[in-house]
Image (cartoon, rainbow, N blue to C red; front, side, top):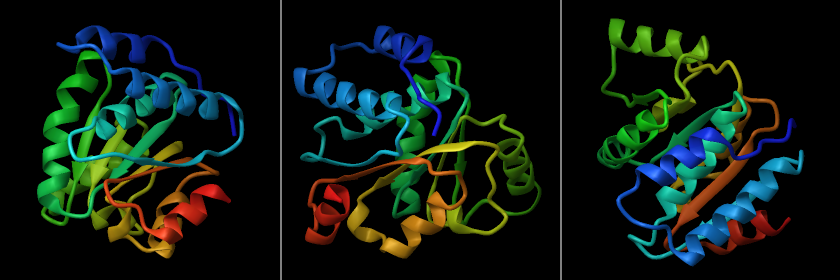
Length: 188
């Protein structure tokens, strides 16, 4: 796994925020950056209350991966949540010069084909989606990072199907309510 180090995109994100990151957000972000730079695939769980900034921490990590030329997939359990994440993350990512796409079961026909072609060609840096990301026609040029939100809504085999679309991508699972199996998987 090639090392991924924070760079221009991460700095631009932090400068564009209308607030300062908290100590805990910075600390977790630094731990993730250390994992990304290690050259070993990361398997990390971020647990925090709703509104604690887990998504911002994940976006910061996805920007680090994009800065190194990799792509990221962000999996949400529902279309409403996927759209909410896209509406929140896209403006921040675009300020840093990144391209964000949204893929749910609602995207059909030509729009879906164009989105998937852009993703496969590496023209989309972050793809946010629902279970539609598991579809065989969803391919990546260089899937280097997978984020799974509300991880308790997905099974182990579903996580593996998504990470199999890359070559040993880093994985970050997020939850407000961790389940014991996820804690064990993150530990080992």
